[in-house]
Length: 315
Image (cartoon, rainbow, N blue to C red; front, side, top):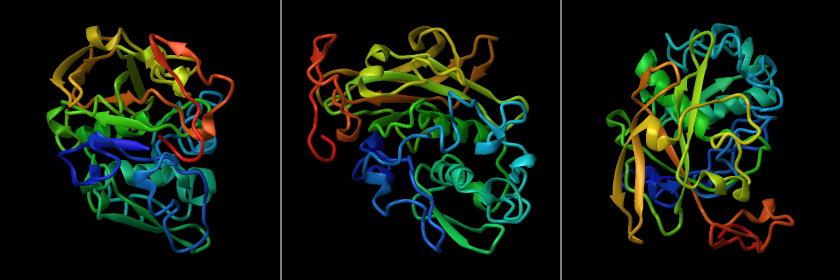
């Protein structure tokens, strides 16, 4: 469940911070004229991550088999072009690349959710003529539906995609915030009551060759593993390069949340080579894990916060 800022219409139900929790994680592929996700995808925890089966995998890296190549990035070899609109044949091919297999179509779904606005949708056919509709949500690059996605657009879409990465493919509720001027639709005000733990911040560009993916650990990054989130905090996930902690690597804007706690989101971050990235997204986590992810960790105390098991749905 992925949340984004309350200042965005998309955040209405689960994204109050972004500040809401927007599920950008999809699990199944449907061979029919419909969205490859639940209609309530923006408001549950089943759609806010990219698993090893869906494209971003710490076990396989950004593999060509899943749509992303660690050597070539989101290149034309995948049937994808940032120079042309996604809705065009030259922007996203139906005959080759991402649209031709179920796992790689999951990546197309996330691309659409990240790039397009709520209310926009991408309709594409696979190589057999079966039609698929992918709904927008975050709006990191809405112009890409019919036009080019420039470098700034690519960086915004990359940050959004990286927030979805989770080593084990677990579906975890997250909140997205950003103080970057180009991501004002997400917003920098968070829900510190429901999502009090700063997991970290992601940034980079997946489009050039080789792709560049970075993450810094947030103030409560040590709690990510407790919530079954891996990658951003640097736990057993090699596909993202870790930088210095966010407090050092990023310029952050901090505001007081409704619970009185500081919610800090990045406006810019530096990668280890000194490059400044202007479209970072910061991720916040809840204190509790999803029911489907519950295991022997129930009742474990970490940092003074007790983690409880859940029965049915999310809390």
